[in-house]
Length: 233
Image (cartoon, rainbow, N blue to C red; front, side):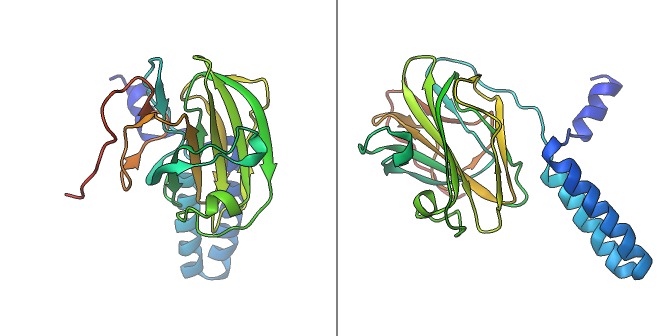
């Protein structure tokens, strides 16, 4: 590893959505230092956290037909069957839904779970209840995306606002072609992403497992094994 690679491994790129917030935190911190130093120290801690929150590291995405990659960093809070959001017009039949909760210390950049084309994008206003709860998938503010994958299947992935999240950012538009692991949005500040797959798709993660966006394999359309179980050890 050369010097440049070593520097890149320490200083992770910052998502452009964070530049304004980091600047505001820094200005407030300077003001607090001038008013009372202990408050300024608190401001420094919060500014460092803000930089950390908006980090946007590169990821090494597994590439093979049939793999579904995690769209977010966080804890898998749900592996169950549920109907996809009605606004995506994918029918009422239950599908495998894998929910990933992002806390305020996780990377919040979201990535495409598969290669495919965005065929529908719908924003729905809603509540801001705790995103670890399954009812958040139905009741909370969300941005729902429907994708036709490279293999011709329809899947959905949904950005869901959480208890403290108040801003869903999704530059991806209908007609956009995305690669698995490619960035498509970000949520501020703590939230959830759900992925809806065909019924019968084998999940490769268990509830409670930590997922890494753009790297962790959530499911494999070609797998013949049974759903995985997990134990805390």
